[in-house]
Amino acid sequence: MTSAVVIAGVRSGVGKTTIASGVMGALARRGLRVQPFKAGPDYIDPTYHTIACGVPSRNLDTWLLPHPVVIELFHRAAGTADIAVVEGVMGVFDGHSSLDEDGSTAELAKLLDAPVILIADAGKVARSVAAEVLGYQQFDPDLRVAGVILNGVGSERHLEFCQPQIEATTGLPVVGWLPRRDDLVQPERHLGLIPTVEGTVLSDWYDALNAQIEQTIDLDAIARIAGTAGRPSGSDSPVFPDQTQRPRAAIAVAQDRAFSFYYQDSLDLLSAWGAEVIPFSPIDDSRLPEGTGGVYLGGGFPELFAEDLSRNDGMISSIRAAIDSGVPVYGECGGLMYLGESLSDLDGRQFPMVGAIPVVSSMEGRRLHLGYREVEACAEGPLLRAGEQVRGHEFHWSVLQNPPGEESAAYRVVNQGGRPEGFRHGSVWASYIHVPLASRPGLPRRFVDACAATTRK
Image 1: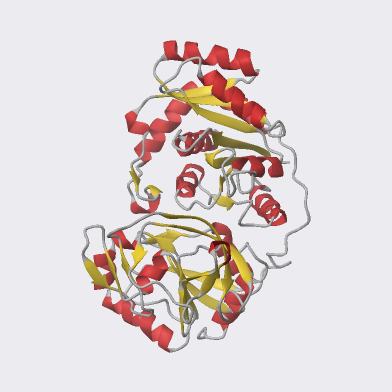
Image 2: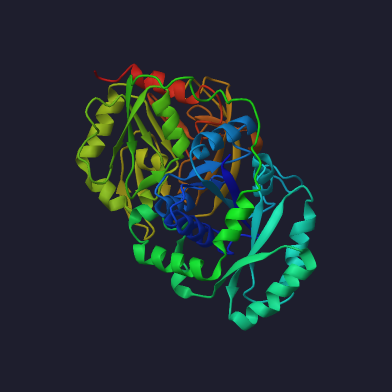
């Protein structure tokens, strides 16, 4: 049985990613095989885990995915690990609803039968932090809160005003703390932390973080807590085939500084159902990979690299030629923006893009679109048949100058009054909605089937 622990926060901004990445990295440096996970639909935080552990971090979302699928994905990844470390999302009880636990870190921890270490911010309090921890401990008696880590501790004297009261009031051990250190704070942007693929996170940061973790966090105590995890039970999920199929479709997946938002399990599912997943760069490569039978353009930050994308005439021409020949092209969020007629960067400069769909996207007048979405396909597409529904997630600041109409929309958003979302045109299917391919049986197989028909042997 793999040991497992969930590192959760009392709220967003308490240092979950820093502490979770540091704990993962420090355990890995001790020679343990650490499998990292991220609760919820986050693409950026897992990139920090991946560097810390040397293996891909994976998302587990109890609203987007059926619970048996969550358990299956956990077992598949953690089966050969010594310890699984799950970073939570937002506050431990925050999820899809204001009145239940759907999609929350708490729901995931209980589903996995894993203990929780709670991160609390001690930055502007002393013994009062014990009252906050007590409230979280008692809010849901079924959640196994097993320890506390304090962040933002000013000094060891400050710690003496926090730790004893927490332990006396709650009976929970304070297994460590992090001091206030500006050099351990990673810069943020409009969608959160900056993805590691952009090269802004240096090895020196990990070295400093791991040294601090070793000094002030009791890793042995965390390992003991993780050892109390149970083994979640559930039926096998139907999303993976019994045996990985032989490659029958070449799918080019955009992976570079502009496009990096993918669920690792989605890529694994494509491979398992017979896809040869071939990474390519819309910024640096002059054309699609030879023999491409399908194109997957995930999310990312195309607005930051709009000029570079626009200048790459060879790639734009190659994608247009693929579309003209009927190759399925699937775009999510940043992929939608790239496939449009033009997009503007953060300075308001507008650049022409692929022009496959009538989209003009802009960062001017931007506002946050965030949340879980349940969508219904308006027509036959590369993932869904007309009328089929799937769960996804939306998170972007850009806006479209010409929103979709009923006649060209890819989806109707069921949990938002049926509003039209995304565009479909010929072999192109693009939307702001991010869809994990494990969220519905048949999605990856249908996409591979569509791409196999146009793969050049």
